Image (cartoon, rainbow, N blue to C red; front, side, top):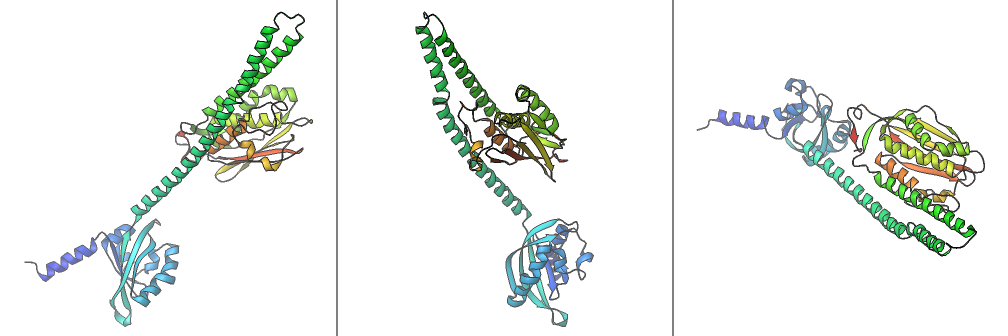
Length: 384
């Protein structure tokens, strides 16, 4: 049969090692008792807290304010509180999210009330909530991306049935005419037909090439490393060397900081932007300025030109898949290049935009992430 002493020892053991934290305080906020569970969470010794610290000394800044303005006044007025969220702070400054219940349990010396708080550690619950929020955000982004993909597929279907088939129809029609004209002397009509065939074949080849390049841009298996933007620009310029020499374009690129990204995709990005700046040039010699602005976590890049420009109302449309502001007869192109640029920047978790004015050129601007100590530990696939 258990004695009173045994029951007392059992009760004390239950109090000290309960799955909850327990804490008692006086009306002046001084801690008068605390169980071992809460001490373990906070990593304090009992002698460091009892009769030496106020409850608010163990709380976060927000918790202290809430304790003074809400929790303690409620305890004094009603004698109890329930389901209050507060962040405790351990000895090392780490926050511990908790759920608090409290009750007035007695009177101490000098007529001060005693209040007992039960403390539930909800750190794991918070982690679950954060994981759920993250999963929800990822799901929303996935839905958004699926909608964009569906729109691109619809546009692609239209392009396949119209833009790709139209050049082929022209080619087959010209071939038929050549067959009919085969015995005609002089050859002037034949020369014109062959010229049309060559032009449409080149257009079709360019469109198919850009479509294939666009399809290759995928963030799922993209390796990210530390990259020199100067090296990226150098490679991009080599790829558009003929355009630069043909137009005598002046391209200025300052020394750039390192960024964190995929080199192949970034070369494609600058190749498209610099190539576009030359393609949509005015009658003046092309003047293209690349600018870099470094912040704590990212690099802001601007590509300025003195080209023909366009109305700002089309600033979003230019990044659309197969969207063009000029007919192919006026300026050759497929309308895929800037859509590819947008996808590359999105894979790099950046933003891209443009400001432009007819006759005064355009400025394309975008952001890229800087390398961090963590990002340099090993190559990454995509960006989380």
